[in-house]
Amino acid sequence: MAKTGGVVMVERVLQPARLPDEIQKEKIPPFKWTSVSVREIIEKDHRLEASVYGIEGRQARKNLEKCKWDIVYFGDIFIKKVFYGPRSKRIYISNSNKDSVGFLGSAEMLSVQPKPVKFLLKKDAVGKFSVEKGWILLSRSGTIGNVTYVNSTLEKFFISEHAIRIICNEYPGYVYAFLKSKTGRILVESNTFGAVISQIEPKHLNNIPIPNPSPILKQEIHNLIEESFKLRDESNALIDEAQKLLKEALQLPEIEKLQSKAKQYDKKAGVLNYSVPLSELNSRLDGSYHVPIVNEIERHIKKKAKEVLKIGDEKISQSVILPGRFKRIYVEEGNGITFFGGKQLFELDPSNKKYLSSSKHEDRIQDLKIHANTILISRSGTIGKVTIVPEHWDNWIPNEHIIRVVPINNKIAGYIYAWLSSDYAYPLITRHTYGAVVDEISDKQVSKISVPLLHDKNTQKTINDNILTANKKRTRAYELEQKALSVLNEKVIYA
Image 1 (cartoon, rainbow, N blue to C red):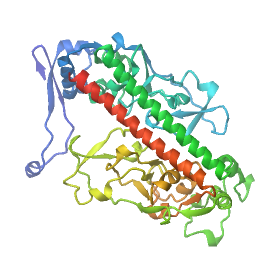
Image 2: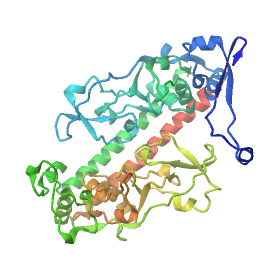
Image 3: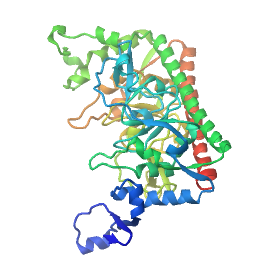
């Protein structure tokens, strides 16, 4: 629609045709509209997508205009270089290759302790996909605006070209905090383009406004972010040490060696094949349930462990819970209970969180809430993602696609997690997978997964304590990041 001196932008989600009485029963979302001056269109590189001039983005800019600090553009002061890696043919190799480096996508890079499933040869990919400590990574396609800060953990991996690399002149922790904030994310998303897959380009970041507070404030926020990611590194080191102690105590060889020892019926056939006695079928005729590596792992831990129990054994767990499906009624942030899905299971602060209505879900809230040191296992889609609940997730609610394992107490909780998150427990979990379209496992199947207990109680205690200490460090890391965001909002953006 034409308007003197400008253009009216209209944005609305298309709705199916409705009868008048249906309209009365259900409130239809109103049009989102705003007027845009020709000058604004010119400043935005003549872009005519309504999303570029969205109400939320315009409100975010107005909020910044009221800020007491000078407003500058990213490219003016803070950014030294912004780019993403080249598109390049990737030749994936096995993790067993000593020169392999894990390759992460723009979603996997958000994990506190990434576990890559793809690997590249170091000499072929270094420079193309490598990142350095202190850089900021921002997802640029698909889900726009997910951001992370490169610490010692992330520096070890190659990162997909779908993540924009931001190298700052100064205070990268402050820049990260701004991009992590609600205001920063809205401003990034306002630059989205693409008819099928949403994208942003590095050049769009140069024109994003950002407050330029006093050096003292910028340094304070930067230090909080630096310390937060340092604690994440420390927690990962403790978990790695626990996994190493577990492996040594059970005298576990590399998983590839166990795989090579697993019996096949005919190795010359070119495909994995094996025979199974009728007594071991367990009414399962799917080949994946009977993979030889499972028997090899079970055989090994029975020899080396003091005792092998099942997850459902009352000696080590209170319960294994599979919450039923339920209708979700969402509310605005701050008015409900934090709700997240299996995709965010490895994240410290789950991205794309939603909030469930406390009053509408009152009858089921207590059954759905999780508590610190409960172990979560993804049960559908991607099977076998395992994490331990940190204290700051206490009373949050994961969706029904996640099984809860509630340990008998904190003296065993960390040890159970160390085992279930290991490479050796993964085949024991995934062997139970069933489903023709969407992969699934059930709580009853999880209850049957083996857990080896150690002869050396001191080593088992050390493993358990390492995991619980690592979990506390993660909560502290979360608290420091939240404090940085609070300082940013109170003393900078809304000052």
